[in-house]
Image (cartoon, rainbow, N blue to C red; front, side):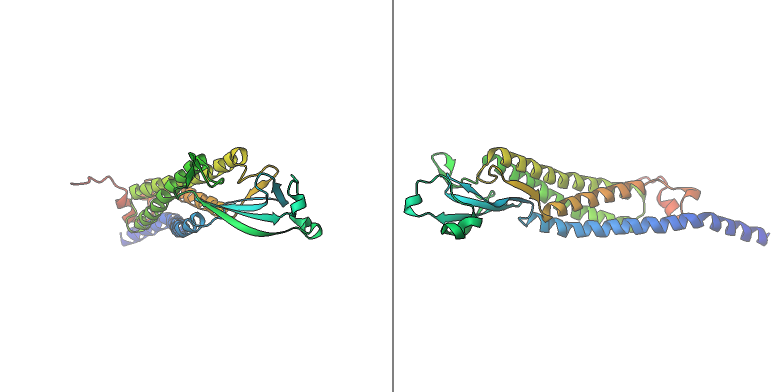
Length: 272
């Protein structure tokens, strides 16, 4: 009789051994997702607070006759755009010239001038003159894009922090419903961060077509490091949402790796 009990217990242990191995892999994956989501909160803050999202540049500078200056490059962040330009000091006999050499030729032509940076904060109230902003880099539509990005950026930061907290709670309470809740929160943070990335691309297209002071003709752009950090945050949150959702299946009875997990997934009446 005792021999039968020992053989039954050993057979049950052998049947659950693959489940225990799968449980170890599951916990490692979910723990890794939790750590990455916590890291992404700081990565997201770094990305939003820097001006390295979009870099607009030109080959050797673009001369803008209406401004009397060369556009060198500009860096765009979530709420601020900084232009780096060169303003030459033309000789009096060349004052009526509508074209000028590029900066690479300044040493030959004898032109002198100065480089300066002009930054536009789209969250600040612009100074107006005759119903128009005095800063030519300030565009109303770009300002609306910026407000949208800031709103979703702040929301996504709080949602990511909340998702990290719920993810940690799933290790304390393994019930499937908490994993599904964590998956839903990660999906919301994925959506919010993705909105910021999409609005950034839309604002670049708008500047290219309508705001020549920021994006002159014959200039080109490429996305900078903060843009790719934002995509990293989007992908990590999406992977975390998919992982928590995948491992939130009910495992009752013999399908559970331990009796504790089997009891956790049993139907429960939640009292008041």
